[in-house]
Amino acid sequence: MPRTIWSGAISFGLVTVPIHVVSAREDHSIHFHQVHLEDMGRVRNRKICELEDREVSNSEIGKGYQLSKDTLIPVLEEELREMPLPTAKAIELFAFMPAESIDPIRVGDGYYLEPDGQVAAKPYTLLRKALERSSKVAVAKYAWSGRERLGLLRVRDDVIVLHAMRWDDEIRDPAELRPDEVELTDEEIDEAMLLMDRLTIDDLEGGEFTDRYTQAVEEMIDAKRENREPPTAAEPETPGQIVDLMAALQESVAKAKASRGEDATVHDMPKTTTKKAAKKPAAKKTTAKKTAKKTTGRKSRSA
Image (cartoon, rainbow, N blue to C red; front, side, top):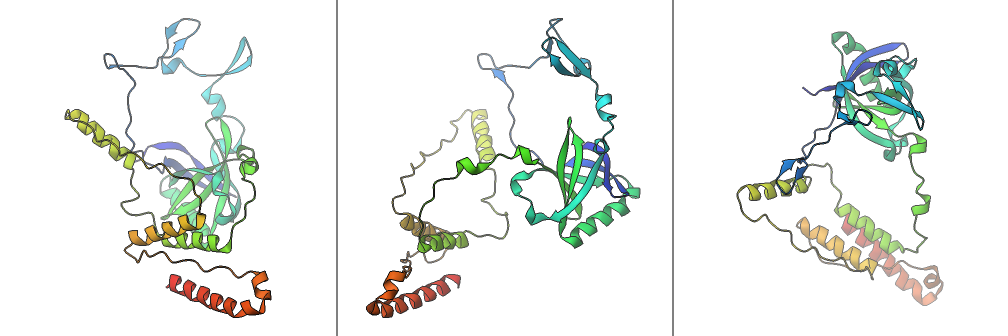
């Protein structure tokens, strides 16, 4: 059973749902100890009191707020728990909205909310079914780890999930990171969309969705344990500068097709008819042929 991180309740109007909060994630990464490389002795972090110059245990350690250079105000965990704040002991739902209206950059780690006993099963199920039927998510406030936080509640496999969310002032404005405006042709955009179509999948299942870094670390540790040379990586190809964007896109589409066992022949993209060409009488017939060719090409791709 996963360990309970926090216990409290969901406050939904006058409805209260007692819940336990457990992590929705499992950590399968490989962890290392800090060691002294000369003799492989463990290196440990010790907590030393500056005034007494001695190591102190966790039971002796608390929180303190620095009021000035020489003054610290002690703050006890009991005082934080007993603050007159509604969200100190409850996840308070205060709004509902469509999930697609929330910018994913604001959504953080997820936690499963487990009903606390049979008495909580009915209101818990009521909230879950209401969320499912409305196709909305709940926006909540709750207080964890020394501050009030913004949260999002949604349903996953009949369980309510709480996601931590960032406040508005915690999201940086990306305006200064935008590149200068550049000109793109319709053919380049169409080819990029064709590449996206070739790489579109229905789910995140399959061998390509594995942690290759952890596998490589495990292989290295096994090799060192067996006193053999660990596997080495091949020299990565240095990416060249893209001179012809269309050619790079077409080659990428061909590789995507080949990886799926399709015909990887690269075909030239039809050129977009310009207004200038359409004004010339002699060019009208050519334009019609090109348009027909473009229509045929799109049908063959979609097929």
